[in-house]
Each structure stands twice: as C-alpha cells, then as structure tokens.
Image (cartoon, rainbow, N blue to C red):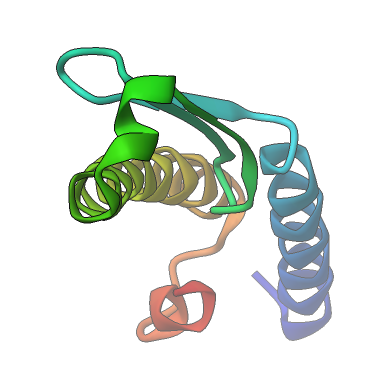
Length: 106
C-alpha cells in the first residue's frame, strides 16, 4: 500500500471514529439500584441524561450518596465497554496494520 493511499485511509478512519463518538452521544445506558429506588440514564460517552430518585431515599443523605455512587459507577462501566467496543470495531475494520497505530485511538 503506498503512503498516500494509507494516509487517505487513516484520515477516513479518523473521521469514522469522530462520527462514531458523536453517535455514541445518542446511545443510552440504563442502570438502577438493586431495589430500583435509584435509576440513572447516561450516554455511551458518559454524559448523565437523567437521575430518578425514589422519595424514600431523600430521608437519608448518606444512603442516597451511596446509591448514587454505586449506580453511577455501574452505568459508567457499562458505557465504557460500549464505547470501547464501538471504537475498536471502527478502527479494526478500517485501519491498515501499522505497528503502534492502535495506541493513537485510545
């Protein structure tokens, strides 16, 4: 593969990655506490969209904080997996095999 063609492919792949990142703003991750008293929705790019809190949690600040931390961390972990899988798929399909290039997209 000649250098110009490879550079063109690299630029096209970078654009696909940027497009994928924008699309991931529309992918929603739902997570809730085990008892469903707290629910969160975030995007695959870790933007919080909604938090729904049952009124019973408003009576105990410490419990609410624990619920928020646990539930948001679970949602963020799921979002990271979706995000990475999508970006990896774009990079693997479209990228020429150049040693060290996979580090560019992390």
